[in-house]
Length: 174
Image 1 (cartoon, rainbow, N blue to C red):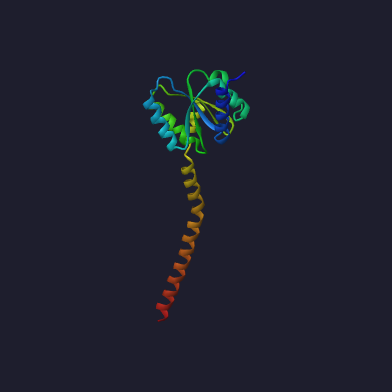
Image 2 (spheres, helix red, strand yellow):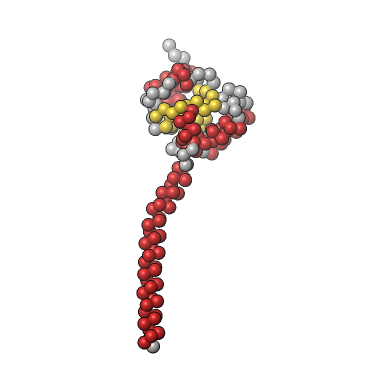
């Protein structure tokens, strides 16, 4: 029979998975408190939370939530793991973790889930290479603005040509 503590943890993990179903699993063994605190601050700035989990309890919560398809629980959730629960901007969170792991070799990205799809470490690295949500929105706005700018420029050229024509006719007759 599960203890009250484990039941409470499972409910906490389930609530996190419900509010933020996109997450990245990291192996953090060897990082000290200062390093983990610095990582948590960077992840908070990127819109994510970072939680050390009990593997068995987290895997039960993950199975019950249905947040991940084909997640390899046995091979992924071994050793000391912490989960970065991401909001909608998963690439930004993946970039923070990738950059932090370059400076701190003890942090290892092991897996991730985005839109209920499992990704291994290489898949998470590919996600980190994607543009952030803000960059995508800026590119989309530029693409949407481009036709309007071209139309305005064309109309301006037509009006300017008409004005030059009228001026030349007026000078010729005047």
